[in-house]
Amino acid sequence: MSLRRRDLLAGLLTLGAAAPLGCKDTAMTPSNLAASTMPVLFLAHGAPPLLDDAGWIGELAAWSQALPRPRAIAVVSAHWEARPVTIGAVRPLPLIYDFYGFPDRFYRLQYPAPGAPELARRIQDLLAAARIPCAEDAERGLDHGSYIPLIDYTMPKQVDSQYNSNRVIATYDGLSDFPDRPDNLWADANAFAAAAIVHTPAAFTGPGDVPPQNMKTTVNSKGATTTTYLIPVNHLPLTLPLRYLGFSPGFVDQIDAVLQPQIDAGYSRYDNPLNRPTSVDPAHGMDPIGSLDPATRNSIEDTFNTVRSFMPPLP
Image (cartoon, rainbow, N blue to C red):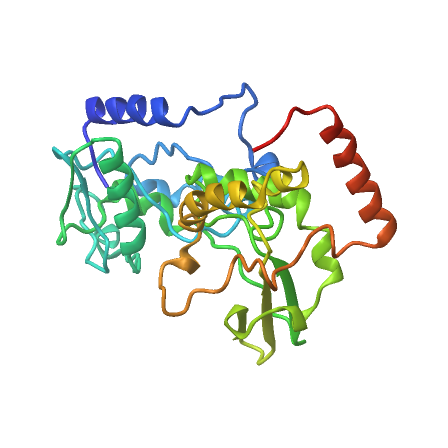
């Protein structure tokens, strides 16, 4: 993906107005990246001979091992300028050797990137929402500003177990089911609420509480299976406190009807209506308070009753 500097600055300002970003003085280093959201990295890659620099390669390796495994990588290259903002390399294409006078071996480098068309569409949607013109060049491969830093980017290997395992997850739980589209702020807010509300009660449920469409089994390289059970919830966690505070179910249902499609858009698993799992089921979904032991349940209900006593009449 490429854009001129003035377009980049304009885009950042526009996107910043829509979604302010917090900045800290703490330097991002491999030691503190592991617990962070996937960051934006600035890599002054230089010329292809940097691939022979053991120190530079070692630094890249340290960064790659400190980061979680990314689903995809978007690169803003300094070696491709176009107007409007243009996205390329969305499918496998030959590399562009846009450098001259170097040893022949640098012109035989290979980086078989598979492409990420879903990410490209997502970037186009975000730019369109910010009213930034965007185009796609279906024949543009990766230039050396993109692939030189990535050739020696070592992806952390996934460790496969020889044992079968089960994963029981509450829908929307921010600790185990965070949105895979974290730019969706409604989904983020709902996940944070769910981390506090549904995470612990999920321990009191089991596979029998999960409908068939919410079960998914994968097989790893050692033949072991991992079965994920996604527990539906009875209501959106984001608005569940309103119900506990005494707001009428009909009133909160109207809010949920507006919010749930926006929240579900933060999860790619709901994109296909033919095989999407059930997220909210008022009749059979997990009741976070009802799932707890009586003493804990009574304590929570007493707290909400106390708060209600200080509140005016509710809709």
